[in-house]
Image 1 (cartoon, rainbow, N blue to C red):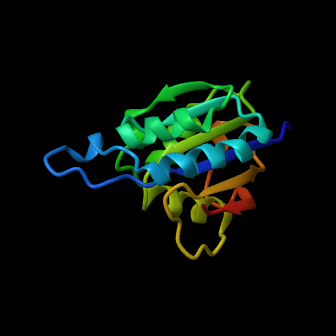
Image 2 (cartoon, rainbow, N blue to C red):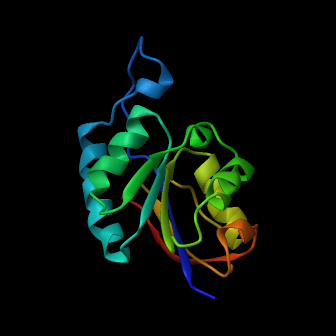
Length: 154
């Protein structure tokens, strides 16, 4: 069985944008800085695939992470519950060993808790969790199949 790693990232801090739909909210300058800093750490894990919500703030976060990985925009990540996020992850090709998921709260926070049974005191913007998975295939991903290896907050 090959080891699998999942990095769950909440998008960096977004500004309020009166008159713009929620999906169009941009990152703040501090959010951009935090996303670049998180990318420096996440790059060391050499992820192969980034699954990203279609919102402006998640796409920009993924871009600023600067990962040498293909990026797939997944509509189902926006406003997703943990079960929805598990569904997206289960569609991942088994050749891929390491995935970064860039999404939104409360879904990403609840996903980390569901996979690892960890007790997390919040999941602020640009926080990320590195989860080691004990599954032979992404299709087997289920609550309790992960171990929280690292938690980082900006």
